[in-house]
Image (cartoon, rainbow, N blue to C red; front, side, top):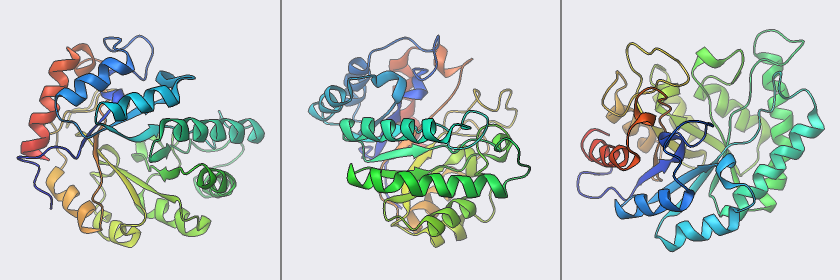
Length: 285
């Protein structure tokens, strides 16, 4: 495992950790101010959300790199299945627009959160087939634009309305079905900490398919499964064991802190939140 105790340049900020991906939350810092704050603290990379970027993808990407940060990723495509994804043409067009935004930013990875159970179906199987078909349609376009696509399985509590993709096993299965060289997975502690098959599935994925690693913690007494994530060290996830599995499978990229915390961390001073991230990353992750 890499030693972060004296070098935290692998640390990346997902701007959602400051509340900026949801209207009405966070301190309202501009992308430029967030970039500068991360650079001052030695972060190596940053990940944005589409709502922050608008038509400024090229400008913001250049601004980040000028400050010494790489743009590790962009969140996210639209849902590909589920109640918000009934119009296939509209979904694919929006997905391609998100790919264009990632390319403009110079983002290495565009995250895919697939969406919930598709209308008219039950269970997961049919929805996952739709996901595979739609990912297969957008993957060549992403390859042309130099963008890698990362399927992010979510915790099973989201299976109905946010992600019918709930395990690393199913995510790797999808990669093997689609067989696009620019398609891989993102591994988020919040969504996989409970999975006793995680190590085996990560080794099955291998270094060529693990495109991202996301940090946070699962609070034992979670009050809101979407907006009550813990800062690293405040919950029950075995962070070092998970990273050992991720890195044991060959991943050596950024470690991206992504914390949705409407009633705690999003109410704090962003500078202080970033300072805590650095300290926890260097000592606990």
